Length: 383
Image 1 (cartoon, rainbow, N blue to C red):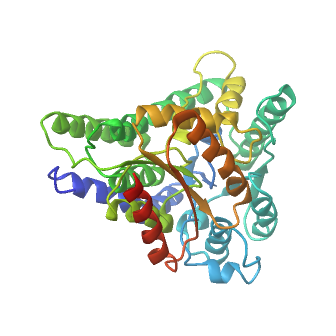
Image 2 (cartoon, rainbow, N blue to C red):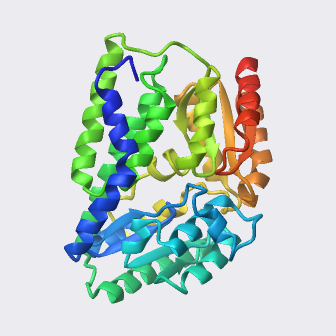
Image 3 (cartoon, rainbow, N blue to C red):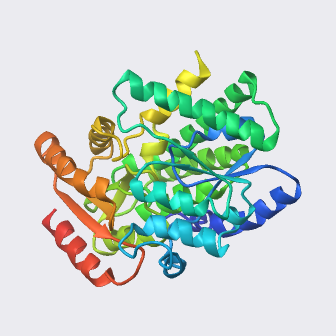
């Protein structure tokens, strides 16, 4: 970003964190550090961290291996599922290759069945997610699943997990969440201090940074510097402010962000799994540790949960805090829960906030770039 000197290089470092992380993961493996791979924000990372393991995000946001995945999986399946499976099958994701255990979750039927095939060539543990978050039975199920995950990790790595170690992991992970929120809440500044593309580079790239203490310090320092320079007048020009919701966004799906910002808008916030959905709420540091983990992770507003009141509440909060002029719902093709839920999101935004809304269905290819640009340009012009 030209308005803030030296910072573009820092943003690019985060953007390249995935590639650099490959070398870091290999070094960790040589040091016999246990590695747990994950795809989803429902996975309680604190359990693995308390066992001395490093949690690594697995490759799932590119169409590079989809052709190979389609030899085993249906072509009309969600690209995220095909990408996840393809990178595992082809060993083109070093994070997957070096992982000692992959933790999956039943956030959709396609993923659930895909993990059965993945288990043929990788150690996979699947957490059984309840369909609801609003009743005692669902909460009891999820608490049981967290305890079962702990047992699996203890057995896999031969390391008993103490309550003290788990509390320490909760504190560290909460510090990371607060540092990420400190950074991405820069999007609340009006006019913006940085583009949505730069916010995404940092937030997405942070998932591939394994030294959490260094990451926390860097995020806070960067946020403070950007805010200080914004106060001194280094700001972007005013444009319509767009809030993104929907499916995870990163990698190939960044084309939506580029389309928005190349056609006269700024992306100021991300409600989806890449942004606030996974980070906004911390784990309670007092009381029973398993109750605290259960409450935090079951509060994630994913479309696999029904009813999904948590998503509506977070959207309302962010619409106000980020002064959004419009909301764009990014839906990956064949992601049925997010596609069906789009009507509820549109109704909520229009009835509660009188806010323009547009749903975009896309995949990881570049085939729809022209159509995407046209639709986004028309939406922003309307604002």
